[in-house]
View 1: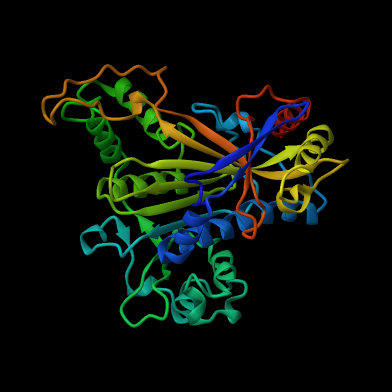
View 2 (view 1 turned 180 degrees about the horizontal axis):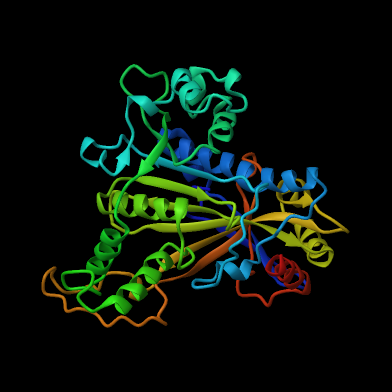
Length: 395
């Protein structure tokens, strides 16, 4: 997931739509895997794709139920989201920090000795947690063979898991340090902060009235490509990512819910206050599109069927779609003027703050780093996708 700098593509056009094999830069891939933070980020990303997406698909299949696929068109900024929650969909909220959360941020990220990851605390908070008897202290390290199983075991717990750098003397620098971590920030303060940052406000949140604030709140969630009325874990993820970005702390917030059925990465860095947004979901490929992709893959140095596709129903296949976004000019601070001299900008509700950057099918497992570039989010919805969405709306 983190090796996409310096990619080269091999174009291949099918009868349905064009696609291209994207090969990773091996030097960057090796360097990232030797860096403990990037190694941990990749490990968490892969574990959550397996658990929240592929694992959820198997949950439905094991009960003989069709999976409620999300149409790629719902990833378009501003698109409406389904409000129904699906109990068989696995969810998670993980905060990965390159370093440790500073003491001055502890009022926003609430963790103490009582929710430090250890067996005694887990037994106190969640004594009926499945697989608790198999928990071992060493599993918390991101290079441990049981790390993925630990994330899967802890993800149903309320609030967030915190993965950060450990203290001196640790055998491996990164691991799960705390569970049940609450993100406590005022949404109004966060909206006001973004409004000031982008110069849509001069001083206070309500200086232009309630209706203006309602628009700003919708744009706040659009900034992360969330639904305009996002709440719960999505709201917590947005608040956490914004604070980490403004402190220029390299981190990634991973969020998946039973409602959206997508996995979102919000990534911050130490060289800007920008937040990178990427989202993953399961894609239903009908037999025609599957056959076209398999035919194109015969000329590629990868095994498309085993690396990218799960068997579906009636000749169809299931794949994992990744979509990466970038903020528009309206969603970035204006350049060229000194801070304090910038005029308040005009807020246009129809002007998007985020837009699609690229999209690709990603491998089902970590052994294959290649991806297949495609264009699906703005493709016309197929009859199969429409049937699925109509069924969900009527339930």
